[in-house]
Length: 278
Image (cartoon, rainbow, N blue to C red; front, side):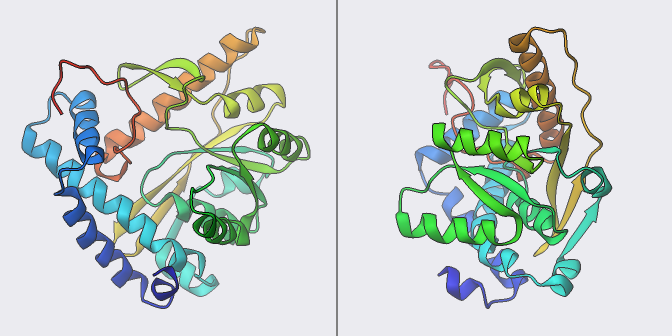
């Protein structure tokens, strides 16, 4: 399927993802129930119609992102410029040792492709896919432009630290739940957040650059890099990390509020309240 999508025009692949996402959003699946629950929790003022519209478009975005992956990574220099508008790349290019904060928002693979397009070497953390063939295919795609793909876990953490110490850029999708993460708030809810990006930034004095991928139309994207986040230090590493993580959560939250239909609502980011229906 991926081999086929690689030769089909990106606009058509994106449209197919939109149609398939609409169908999948209509199914009585637990992931759909979880997505609507999360949307209600974060936007209690939304009507049920609005909740379902956000859920449907968010499902479309997720499926589009999956199907677009082969085509996105096969874009050459000319086609890249036709499909991707880039703003603020100077915030990264003038110091490639910076860390990158992003989220499962828009087509996050376009962020990775963009960094590779500008020749900036980057280490990326990923969760190994259950299917070894799928895992091999995805890691080769994502690593062909920007370089080092690092699997989550203790061995991966050591590789990541080595890469950062050597001055390599490193990217983090920092919006999902981590059971042993730092306690923080997100959309007013208590959550546990990954702390690696904050720990590395503080320990090795690396600046953190937020970046998000926004869909502009079918098969077209805008990637915006923001100025580095100013982190505060009081000399207590755990408190410093907690403060940084809260800042990062706030940045991601504000981006989601701009367009809730572009975020991946389908994962268990929040603790489910038993008395609230899905």
